[in-house]
Length: 183
Image (tube, rainbow, N blue to C red; front, side, top):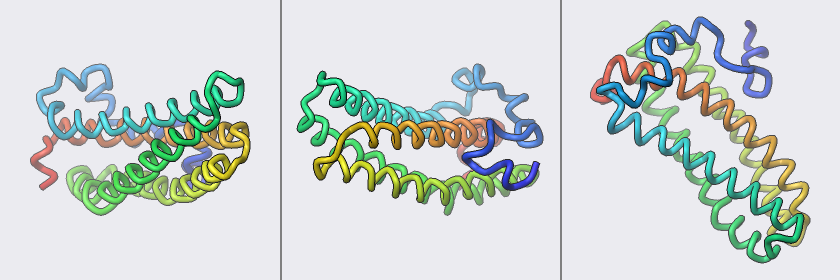
């Protein structure tokens, strides 16, 4: 696979070469692993939060579009939760790029390509977050919820692709080595 094939908007998952640890630590076994509690659990909860925020924003946009939600209520919630999503994602990515990815790459050098891929995703997501913000601002300035919903659907699909790939690459490394190895 080329780098273009592995771009966030092009890939359907991680290549097999980056999924080797996932085979040893399958997703359905994570919660029962002795290294799950603490960092892994917290980190996965952050991902759940991102998914819940995008779902809430989508439901609100759809509610405003079909008259179930007052547009002013949608705007207030969009301002609050949209800002939270953008700020939390930026902070989350900074910590990963500057601390976790380098440390995890040192633990599993054969997965460096995967951590480089995830870092590239973060750069791609900067553009997605900018588009999300511009679209949200359009609603806040009196625009229709429909175009924002469409932007959010695209954003959510790419965010989820990234989160799933990140989980499937990072969690097995931490389960294998323990969170203490990150310090």
